[in-house]
Amino acid sequence: MREAQSRGSSAFWRTAGVLTLCIGLALLIVARSRWLHGLQADPLSTRAAEPREGKPELRSLPKRAEPGRDTVVPAAHKLAGTEAAPGTGASELPAQTQRFPDVSGYVEQYGGMTVPMAPWLTHQLPFVTVKTTSPLGAPKLTAWLRSTRVTYGERSELFTELVDENGAALYPTTLKAIVRPPGHPELALEQNLEPSSDGVPNRFSTSLLLDKGRYRSLQRSNSAGPVPIEYAVEATGTHHGRPYARRAVGSFFIHEPGAELVKSSAHVARRVSGERADLLLSIDIRVTKPGTYWAGAELWADEKPVAQAQLRLGRLEQGEYPVTLLFGGAVISDSRLDGPYAVHNVRLHQVDSVPPQEASAIAELEPTVEFQAEDFR
Image 1 (cartoon, helix red, strand yellow):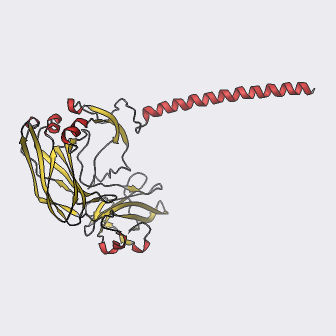
Image 2: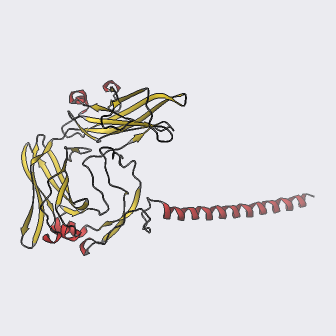
Image 3: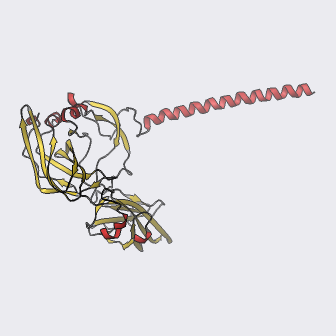
């Protein structure tokens, strides 16, 4: 009897072991299938994939700028200001794998001072707008600043919109904004939002004017980075006969740049030297706070990106300095994009702070005469 029970028990455990092994193999096959599917479908994958409908494709480039390694980039490079505040900040943009131009030849030729811009980029304003939304369901509250770069004494508009589950406009009973540095409730500002002047029916706004004296205690030294600020927009009201409360939160930096761009001094001209023909931007900068600085700008042909220029300025003391940014002739020629060209997004950063202090950018300079791409080399 005891021997029969032992044989039955052994048979049971052998059967259970076989079933467990079969189930494990089946789960492994399913997991592998999903993993392979994910590599094909995941937009963040760095594997090369066939272009999909609606995605920008890289046009063919000349020999010195052939497509190089795969790079994950935002699917769009639009930044907002008005209704376009589609707030294309990094938190809202999907990413996709694109083949970024190989710039190594230009880096060697120009010492890193000028390279081509990615051809799928679209025209960008010199500020970043990031929208933030309330985490609960409808009603949905959305808030954003016109720019996440704010300076003392410069008015910044904070916008908000409220919609129902169908996207229709809602009008809250109360709507206020609270602005403060993280961890400092004693420095909080509270302001009501009023109907916006831009004519959008359910858009509300308030103007922020931040005083340096209020946050002086947070500035640790001359080389300290910009002051981080949090904001929260709170809306209350009634929807479908039930009360609601929604809250959208975001953040920005107050910059106190130690230098500024002198826009009236800006001049763009073609320079021929030996076998080279480049485009140069000359501009003065006025330094009020000694520090280490960097300057950059972009060159566009109508709405198409051509080249970007950058220059490390090193340590600068107080005073006014001439700066020349180079758009390499080979980069312009290889783009095959004819002018007139326009310099956009002239920027100046103090880079010995973390994060860098940013001066107010120049959105766009007057376009050049109608140069042809073949005028440069």
